[in-house]
Image 1 (cartoon, each protein chain N blue to C red):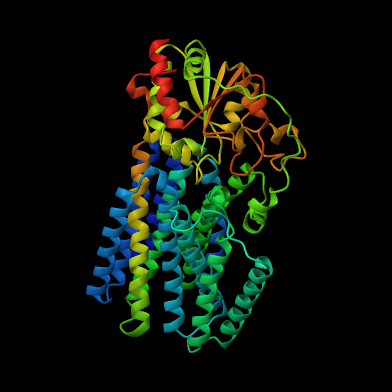
Image 2: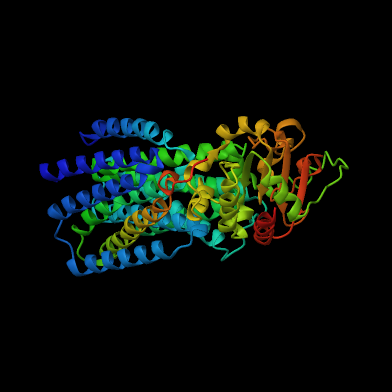
Length: 100
Length: 459
C-alpha cells in the first residue's frame, strides 16, 4: 500500500460530495454547457499524459504516451472552446430592452 | 513533484470548483468556463515545469494537432450537432485516460495492488468510454442507424464478457508485471468491445442518458488515473466530473421515467411494440388553419410554447422566435416550457433556443411551468409528443405512465403543430390530440410557423 492512499481516498470522497453540491445547483437551462464544461475539465488527464511522456523515450510506451497527449489536448481545447461558444449565446433579455 | 507544482495543482482544483459554481446562472456562466480554462492552463504549466524531459518534437506536434483539431471542430459544429460533439470530446478524454494507464502499466513494475487495480480499472472504464462515445457519435451523426441494434442473447453475452474482463483483471493484477502483453492486449480489445455492445441497443431518444453516463465514466477514469499517479488534481477533477455525469444521468432517466438499467438493457422499441394501444378512444381530431391559430394567439393574454426535438429537426427555431417577438409586441405574455429530455442531450433545447436569440429568462423548466398551465390561454406544442401525453398521468396501462410530463392539457386551448398523425418516437397514442380543446395544425413545422408569421401580420 502506498502511504498516501488514505489521504487520496479522503480527497476523492470529499471531492465527490463537493461535486454533488456544486452540480445540483446548476439549473437545467445550463445543463448542456455544464456537461460540455465538465467534459473539458476531465481533459486534465493531459497532465497525466505529460507525466507519462516525460518518462518514456522509445517503443510502444512512447507511441502510447504521444497518443494520450493528442487525445487529451483535443478534449481540453475542444471542450473549452465549444463551451464558450454555447455560453456566448445565452443572452440576458434586460440588455435588449424587452421584458415580459 | 515539487511544492510549487503541488500548490499550482491546488489553484487548479479551486478554479475548477469556482468555475462550476459560476454555472449557476447564465449571466456568470461564461466567466466560469473561462476560470476553469485558466485553472487548466496553470495546472499544465506547473506540470511542464517539472516534467519536461519528454520527446519535445513529438509532444509539441501532438499538442498542436490536438489544439488545431479541437478548435476547428468546436468552432464549426452546428448547435443541433452539439450532442455528438460532446460525445466525441468525451471519448477522447476516456481514450487518453486508458492510454495513460496502459503506458504506466507497461513501463513500471506493479509494486502495489492499489496501483495495479487503479491502472486496470482505468483501462477498462476509459476504453468503454472511448468506444462507446465513438459509437454514440456515429449514431447521432447518423453515420449508422440511430435505432436500437439488438441481437439474440445480447444481455447474457454482455454479462459473460464483463465477467471475463473482471477475471482477466484479477489475473493481470496477480501476475503484477507489465510482461503479460498478450493478455493486456486482449483485455483492451475486450474493454473496447464492451463499450460498443453497451451503446448498440440504445436508440436516439435515449441518447441524453448515454452521453451523461459516458461523461461520468470518463470522470471516474480520470480520478482512477489520479490514484495511479498519486496526483490529487486528477482525483479532484475526476470526482467533480463523475458527480456531474451521475447527477445528469439520474435526472435524465427520471425524466424518462425509466430506471437506468432499463435504458441500458431494455431497448425501448421492443417493449412498447404491443402496448400503448390500450386506450384507442375514437375521439375526433380537429384540424385548424394558420389563420385560426394566429387569431387565437394574437388575442391571448398568456401563451406557453412547448418545443420538442421535432422543432430542431425542422430548423424552425428562428421562425418561432419571430413569432414570439410579434406576440410580445402585441402585449402577449409568451413563455417556453421545456421538458428535461427535449433534445438529444441534457439542456439541449435551451441551447437551440438561445442560439435563435430567445432570451433565457423566457425558458422555464418543467416543474416551474407546470402550475402555470391552468391559467394559460393557449399552448403551442411544436414537434413534441410523448412529453405532453396525459396518459402518463392518468392511464396506468400506458407505457408512459408515471413519466413526468408538461401538463399542457390543463390550458384553455392547445394547438399542436405536427407533421402528420403518426405517433411519436415511442409509438404511443396521444389522447391529447382528440381532446376537444385541442386543434391540430398539420404540416412541416417550419412552413407552419412561417404561415403563422404571415397570418399574424394580418390579424
